[in-house]
Image 1 (tube, rainbow, N blue to C red):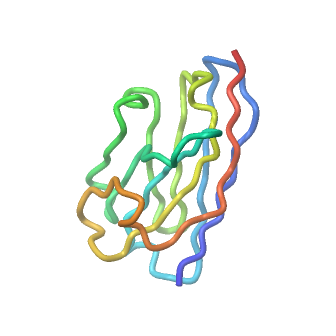
Image 2: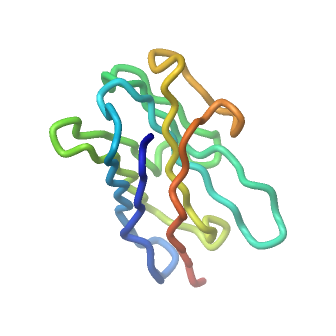
Length: 126
């Protein structure tokens, strides 16, 4: 069983930056692929970024490419999402998730993830 706790959300102006962190416990972090998802009010939860267990493959949704960077530190059991050039449309609750079945392959679907955090709010003002 993996427990995930997100942090680092907040209120930022358009064009600003935030760095989200997700700390994992209770499982084998280094054998898990990690993903970030987000859910805006009235919308479905959507994929944002993914990183394989060794960090050798990273995937992003088109709307954040070039602005967001996912990374992980297996020694600290933590995955990060560096968000730059933020836009008001990035406003959402951001969730991290862990996937243990196929940690070397890109996973973009919610149902492919086994464990979820409770989320952290990111609000970008215009």
